[in-house]
Length: 159
Length: 292
Ligand SMILES: Cc1cc2nc3c(=O)[nH]c(=O)nc-3n(C[C@H](O)[C@H](O)[C@H](O)COP(=O)(O)OP(=O)(O)OC[C@H]3O[C@@H](n4cnc5c(N)ncnc54)[C@H](O)[C@@H]3O)c2cc1C
Ligand code: FES
Ligand code: FES
Image 1 (cartoon, each protein chain N blue to C red):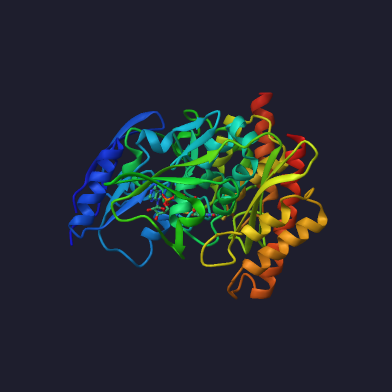
Image 2 (tube, rainbow over the protein chains, first blue to last red):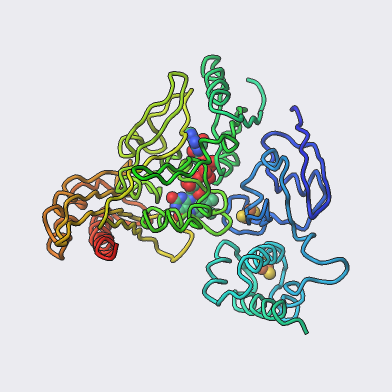
């Protein structure tokens, strides 16, 4: 199978990799680029575990071909923290125990980051609708919503 | 047999060239827009090689033009971008609501009107809304461009009028005249992320006295293809789109429907629900026209 040379920027770094034409961006991120933070839950767009930001838009990386990422800027969960410090969303997920097994967590944090980039002060309803494409089978959603609200608060009023 | 390949032509001629070349040589090509249907299908049982023709890099499939007479929406524009366009939203709120119903935030970032239409699912949410808004498909192929009304586009479950060398460039809508309104409603068992059990799109235009001068009704998920229901529209024209007229329009939708029984709903249930949706969408469209 002939491979394609794909040029991207991932979390600010230039990353070129070889991918096959029918490979999803999710599989390429995990298998070619070695970024294992992005998870596969369903592979069919239903669970959001594979969420990444591509050119400013939140997408399911399982529903995008790697080839479509040519020239794209991608943010994955590995790009959320700033240097060694955790992002407020990550801190608040820990603080609120908004995760158990953690498979859904990268997707939730990337999706919540995309929301806060757009709307720094979302109300609960907005958060719930925005995150409707992210499924968690462990925690229930309340802790996740609280964590996002708290992170928004902290971003607005850094201690 | 061949292999999988991915191409992203930059203009219409190149895209048609690839499609035609494949059609002539008995090779398989599949058009890709947002991929929210196609990538799911690629994971299915059919693993046969093909060329994926990504049409998102073509100007005509991305153009959004709101003209004095006509609105043109590129086939590949994601719902999220349509939803962020306040002018479009105020002109065709029902269509944008329908597009906004598709999937989650993640899906919205990719899913297009063209993909929803070309996938040709009976339950596709935007098709009844496009029918209500008098949408016209602009199709490119080796013979040049042709136009097909949205209600004539789907030919069966998952099939449509396009031939192997054709693809959809965009959709045209007449700019709604003054005192017009549209709306789309669907019924699903959940509040988000589900497939319509029934759907109805309605558009109406009123005169200065509030009498309906023109109407269109499209219904979905209650027949092998989305349908234009002329009798429902006729029940509204000449009335004030009052409860009686809306009830008559709803009854016409029930009559036009030929639904199936499945786990999502029985035949009787779908017939009944499509009438309710038509009534409610009609009332919203009327109120929007009065407010316009
Ligand atoms: C989690 C999830 C939820 C969903 N929810 C809904 C929902 O609520 N309502 C609903 O209606 N749909 C829903 N869908 C289905 C899908 O998102 C929509 O049908 C969407 O509009 C498809 O658009 P796309 O751009 O992603 O199409 P693609 O997947 O790129 O294409 C779909 C089909 O159309 C063809 N095609 C696409 N563009 C063109 C073109 N320009 N010319 C010729 N052929 C073309 C492709 O070859 C393919 O067969 C959902 C999907 C997922 C994964
Ligand atoms: S793995 Fe992509 S949405 Fe579930
Ligand atoms: S923590 Fe296990 S799925 Fe969310």
